[in-house]
Amino acid sequence: MADYLEQFSFLPLIFTLRALTPICLPAYKGSTFRGAFGATFRRVVCVLKKGDCKGCLLKEKCPYSYVFETPVPEGTSKMRKYPYAPHPFVLVPPLEDGERYEPGQQIVFSLTLIGKGIEYLPYFLYTVQEMGKAGIGKGRGQYTLEGVRERDGREIFSEGQIKAPRPTSWKELLQGEPPEEVTLRFITPLRVRYGERLSDELQFHILFRALLRRVSLLFFFHCGGELELDFRGMIERSKGVEVRKSSLRWHDWTRYSHRQRSKIKLGGLLGEVTFRGDLEEFWPFLLLGEHIHVGKGTSFGLGRYEVVTGGEGGSAPAVVKGL
Image 1: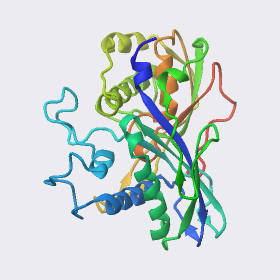
Image 2: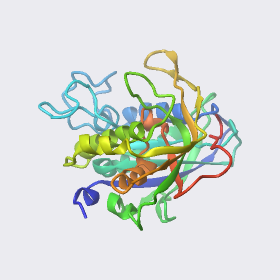
Image 3: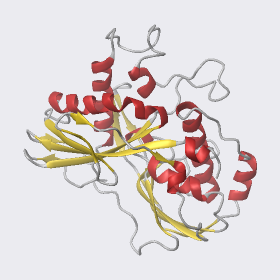
C-alpha cells in the first residue's frame, strides 16, 4: 500500500447547535456560515487586530492566516503564481429546507479538518462558540454549541471538555474491490473548470482532473508530502471511463461577498452521474472526494457528492435541500 495513503489524514466532525433566539438564514446556508466563521476566527485569534494579513509580521505563524489565507511558501514548486493555497478544511452547512430556527431547535452542520489543520481543532471549537454568542444570519440569532462528535458517533466535545480526536487516513477508506460502474450523487453545486470555462457537463476525465489537483495540493500544503504519481498518464487513462447515465442539471446560486461588497453568481451541477470503465487506480480519489469535496467553493460546502453505489443510482435525481 502506497505511503501517501497513510500520510493524508482528515477529521470529519458533526456539530450540534441549539438555537437560543430565532435564527433566520438564507436557503443555502454555506455562505452565511463561512462568512461568520471567518470573521469570528479572525476576531478571536488576531493579535494585532489588523484589517488584513498583508504586511503582518506574524502571518507565517498565525492560525487565522494558515486556516483562511494559507500562504504559499516562497520557493515552492506548486502554485507559485497564486497568493493562497487551498484551505485545510471543508465546511458543510445545514442542508434542510427551513430558513428559520426557533428557540430550542437543533441546528446540525459538519466540518472536516485536513492534515495539519487538525492541530487547530481547539480554535475551530472556540470560534463556533463565539459565533453563537455574536449571532448569525439576519437579526443575529444566537445559539449554544451542544456538542461535537466524530462520524462514528464518538463525542469529542461536550460541556467544555475536549477529547483527543481520531483522524482518518486515506487508506482506511479503501475496502473491497473497485466496481466496474459507480454512481456519484452531487448534493451541493459542482463547479469545475475545463478549457478556460466552467463545465456544464461532466466527463469522467474532467472530474478526475479536478480531484487529482485538489488532492495533490492539499497533500502538499497540509499533509507534508508530494504525490509521486504519473499525473499525465492517469489523466489520459481516465478518458477511457465513460458516462453511462446522467441526470446532472445546472443550478444557479447567488451569494453576497462582503469582501467584494456585491452579489456573486455561483452556478454548478447537481444530480447523479454513472461512470463505467476500469476504475481501479481512480477509486481511492473518488472515495476521498466524498470527504474533501471537489471543484471551486469547497470551503463553504460546494462540490459535495456521495458515492451512491457500484451501479446505477436511484431513479430520482439528487436534490439539494434549501436550493
